Length: 264
Image (tube, rainbow, N blue to C red; front, side):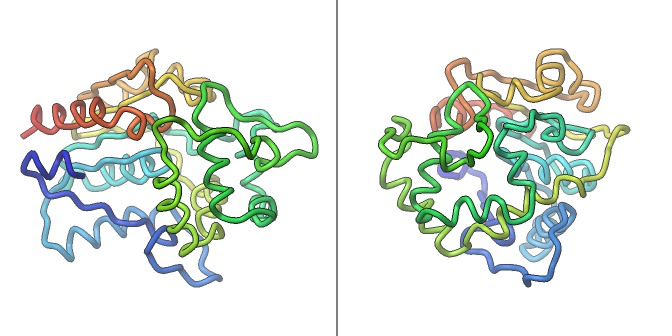
């Protein structure tokens, strides 16, 4: 946000509903991906903004891609970090059963696992587990929180102060809705086999476990995604992992600013 603001752009970072400082939806309300797209559109309308560049990371890339497809007239371009566009809903459906995020899709399982520890410990564990090259997997009877040694150091690019801030946001929101969206809602995503982006697309990828997810290698390196996005640029950060924007912020900012300047 600081980099694009310094370059003369207006930067807006909303918390998705149920996350961070955003209000919690009613308990009986089922989450839908379309709600996230509608929220972005409502923000643009409320602020009288005709067109924007969208930037999404991880599951935030999914509604960013979807917004660009549904509302190309309100979109200048879309930049996504770490996740390729998937026309077949969930790329997690094909994961082996030991992959821990498969288990997070089961109602109540992740909440019970996380509930054994304080929120700061949970956030620390997630960052440690998902900062490597391999897909975190559990043995029979293990949960996510069983996989990380509590004494394992944080990644060198993620400080204890960073952890304090992230944990404070989850203290506010809890994990209930963030587990429902995205993991409990992947089956509700629409199949988009005929999708075609009318706007420029930038995808920034590290060399991490995401490349080992079903279909991702073909989408990213095999040119499959270019079939959906004619104006596509893929940028690799060889030493980057899944949190590439935190690991190499200067490099990612340069890629992002270059994309913005290429499409004035």
